[in-house]
Amino acid sequence: MSFTIAIDGPAASGKGTISKALAAHFGFAHLDTGLLYRAVGRRMLSGEVPLRAAQTLSARDLEGDDLRGPDVAQAASKVAAIPEVRTALVDFQRAFARRAGGAVLDGRDIGTVICPEAELKLYVTASDAVRAERRHAELQGRGLTVDYDQVLADLRERDARDSERAAAPLKPAGDAVVLDTSDLSIEDALAQAIAHADAAGAVRSG
Ligand code: C5P
Image (cartoon, rainbow, N blue to C red):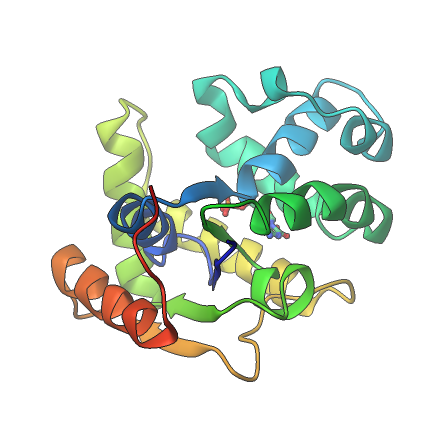
């Protein structure tokens, strides 16, 4: 039986952490859809045409630490504004969402475009300052030297591009539950997400 949890939200809102932990809690598969756009963005930075990259993505494209870096993030949000690139990635995401045993997908348009019929939709958000602090700490933890103000500016630039684009802009689905994690610990945010999933009828798989 399939059960889809769709999680959207801006960069560094906590949606990745919540998605992973929710999937582990219920024994569901997890897909970080941002990685697909990052993989296309990285190939664009190496000189490829974005659409061609999106049409020929393979599992190997999703490997490598640099996929998580700030340059690739900005490139990802540029290729993500190209409607044909998005279309090329739709079937894979929908098939993943409906796999037997349950799935959690996180991104920007999962509840609005990819899985409007998902059993649960969460929109995870947090203030700009909190998100920038989290991303700054994460990048420093990975050994990168970064300036907080630059991280904040990068996040805002990416949010603006993601929210203002015509194709599948970042926004909560009309029936999404909004979870603001600004003042929540990871444990509390996860507990709230699990409570919403329980209420939506999610059952442990496997
Ligand atoms: O989630 P992450 O920060 O890795 O996403 C990188 C970029 O990929 C986002 O800024 C956004 O432009 C794009 N993206 C998207 N739709 C998704 C997931 C990511 O447009 N479902």
